[in-house]
Length: 448
Image: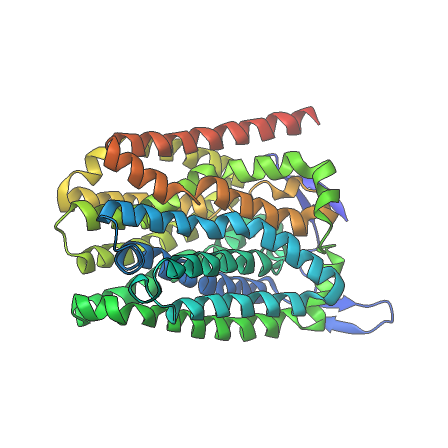
């Protein structure tokens, strides 16, 4: 295995572009899994996770303040709901570490099955959860525990497919294949917003808050089951296992990683800070702000967010072509700068009526797609090969925790108490953090 540096200075492992067969020591040949097949597995897995994610996120705005925090005003209830929303991101790294240990002892299929089974139980549990009206404060405790369970399960559901896709893709198309794996986010947003939009338009508000809001969680549970079998169908194959072993994509103890790879984990998490901060400021925060401070119908705004989901998808696909032409790190750095510029327009657009809000969603969605398309693993090539499997998972966990976990809570709190200008400053801080991390990464790379 050899290493080369790409045009943007990132270290990439090189492999033959075409390997129709994989030879084993015994002389037998096995058909190699193509990058296209891996990409399909990544999209299916991520789409199911993001559908779960957005069902909970939308419910945190439209449902949970009323059914779990009826004793608080609208703003305070939503802030409490966003606080519980963050619990999954706090728990996610612990899920990654715990399930990596399970994989070392019991195998990849056992780990993935257990993680997605836990995710399904927590999601279904929310669908059947009694409200504050029925069991009081215990309902909030149970919701919090189920949210923590979702985070642990999401950390444990890491299957290595994105890393395998990055290593197995043709060297001149790695940006393109990396972007395909990110399409799960807009797919999940489109599906979740569509389900809630249909329910809101079809049911009286009393019925929606009484029982209608539970249906998206039933659907999320069903999607998890389908995704589980689809991913196991790929992950459980002998060819997939051999391919992971050939690329040395195996779990390593976190303590061992911490001694030599802490720098790469921190830089990797901060490099995509702008993208992850923008993620929630375009999708979750506007819905909460519109619900609390605008007379605009929620169903109408959800339709704009659905369109925004398609715009994100277009941006993600476009980012693949751009990254292959100019380099992934250059692309991520340029988009961080553009997000910084965009942050100055946040107050004017969000406070600019329906037209301004629509522009905010659509322009922000396109910037998000361009940036998020290359955010995953942008600097994980810095990891030594034996650490890349676990390093990529922990980097993603910390990127979500630092950049996105508290974004809706902070943005809504700042806008409510100090004005929308502070939301723009918050986004600007994320852009500056990304630029700083990318700069440090480049400087350290040149020094090494």
